[in-house]
Image (cartoon, rainbow, N blue to C red; front, side, top):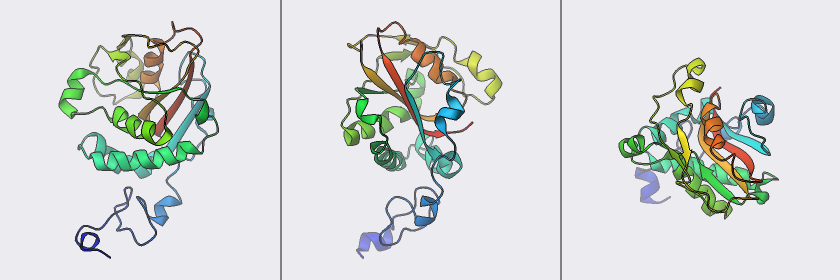
Length: 215
């Protein structure tokens, strides 16, 4: 054991317990329960978007990743974000349809929120996925033109995100398969209006991957 391990021990990204030899990123206890417990397609098949899509995958149980995700997203803890992304990439490597994906596209963040937070959490996650999965990432294709308020009530969310995105450019996405990613899906309203901006692109195939679900 090195001095670094003694004075700065690695801890589980989910529960904070000090990791022991053989454990990486998460402890063995959390490893038993950290996965999203439901079937993503069953949960979201009829509400993820009005556009046809190919696949959907949700990785983490929100009750396990909430603390780490909040530390990353609102506390600026990029280390936690990248740790979560490493786990996510390893998970997606085992998803059978991932080899069909041509591009990864993170959900856009409004410039005011980007300035305040300092980063787009979905883009940070997406860059790690892009590197680990060796799939190109596309950013700034869809612009978030409205800085909508945080969503606290599901019944208001669809109105709060209506018409907040606009397609800036089309970098040759005809006949391509794009993976839309985001950190958390709740009602899927944001995803729905995001992908609506892409509907004019001929023969575009869409799939979705979320780090977690808070529905």
